[in-house]
Length: 291
Image (cartoon, rainbow, N blue to C red; front, side):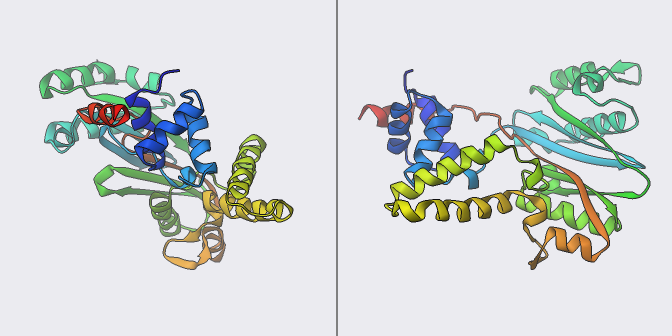
């Protein structure tokens, strides 16, 4: 597979590695982006697990709660300027209110909902024509809880990041504190029971190759790897992370001190996984590859 400027750019954004290192990694892995990430990590050039994909798409996320139902959704625009306009903010509110008051649970069901005699999908198309930018309801999640549970809803930077926690017992203040932590620390799992054995095995192999490439003696590598693996697993699990308001305790300890248990959580960030516009950067990368 040809190593294109777009591939180099994508790998660079994922890992923070230099362009020449990215080009070499892609060449060594025949253009496989995932294998190239692993290659750079094994060489100690990038710590991919600690880097998030850089965000390109604009718009806002939102989280709304009413009774035992909560929703999180993302409405995208082409520019940040439009995302600040009153028309866009009104559309964001209309979409959210309609979704919240329905029993829709999927994006398809949500887009089919009626508001003032018109489907949400058509309302978004009309707004696109009026505003002059393509607008998209990209994703939508509905969460239900029981009467003994509490929602914690939190929006950061006006909706660039939103989070929702569900806790058993405790109170709304505890739930919101945990949601603030989720927004700030971006955990991937609630606890280690949610991590697949395949992912653990893959990470163990990466860490082992990384240690060997660092020149560590093979007779101590396995012990080192297990230590690093346990540290990594704790870093990506919500309950094991140092609590943002008091790093001396974990999120799980904070919840327990307040008589609560974390049940689940969701976190949305605008543009996650959407590739940036190319602009002139691709030409710049291509020129450096050729040189």
